[in-house]
Image 1 (cartoon, protein in one colour):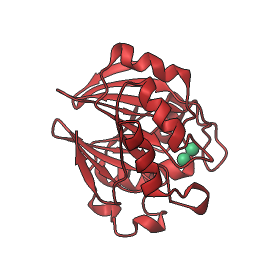
Image 2: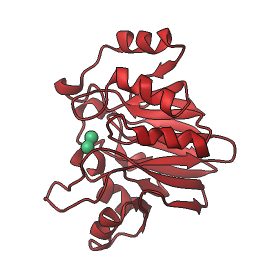
Image 3: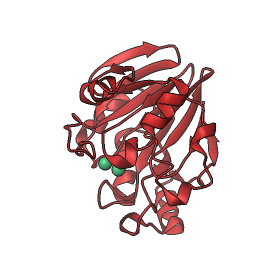
Length: 225
Ligand code: NI
Ligand code: MN
């Protein structure tokens, strides 16, 4: 599995030959100006919640690529009414797709569209490929529910927000990594705006002190799982 960071909480994932995009907010992010959304491949677009900083490029990408959306019931319904197609899921639900298995787990956050439409409950995803499993928490607080995840899944990489203010911060992401029993963390949701700026070196040192790794990719950078 290959994961590319497109800034903020946006990811590209290549898994089993399929291209997934997660929470695409790229054209509206000045820090990601080097990424051209017209060149991104997508078979599926996964959305954790309906906030603008997670969905802004959905319509442009889905229109060009015909990618199917995977999100909660309310978000999929919202886009179906605009003529897009999707597969609704909700927390607790699990499904095998052609790219791998997806389990939807709870997140503690809010979820409304920029036009005020109710965006259902925010979620996270456990994405299982042929040999590796990734947990993408989405925007969330640290929550005890995370402790359930390693009872069912062995997580090889956890993708956590680390910017604080709207989500958990670096210290809490360290605790979250204990909860999901995974010492390799990819940080997201930082530096996009002043409110969520972090000191990279200090953050990575905090993880190192606990014997853990915090990966902060440059925008456009990739890692292998
Ligand atoms: Ni949000
Ligand atoms: Mn957000």
